[in-house]
Length: 151
Image 1 (cartoon, rainbow, N blue to C red):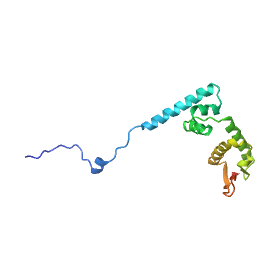
Image 2 (cartoon, rainbow, N blue to C red):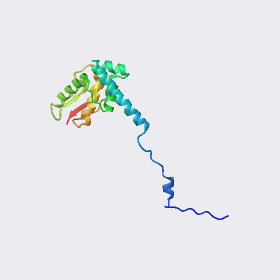
Image 3 (cartoon, rainbow, N blue to C red):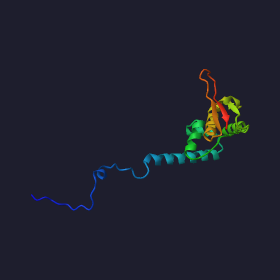
Image 4 (cartoon, rainbow, N blue to C red):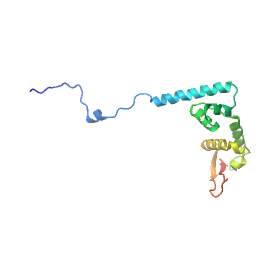
């Protein structure tokens, strides 16, 4: 039986043949999350236009107040609640006292319910380089707080 000859236009190496193919385009999960984010922002804006409070909107959309704020931020929509604005103003006033000034979360006159909001604002100020942690919280005390220093 005669051998069959095939004409090859280019030589392929073993690496070319066995190379994994990269996924082309955007993953379906990315598309779904972008649609969900867009829907969240549209629903949120519609409920704000109806005159509902942030707490009521969070409850209607199935979020806690803090989680809704995080979800909106991830969707690229910056909305600051009146409570967060009050906390930001208070922390800005403490930072305005100048470099070297030290404070803790107990120095911020706010209701206990806004503790997580205070934590978010302090973390944001720390990431921006406006403050740094001077002393970590003491583990021996149940209500111990970190000491922050203005840079």
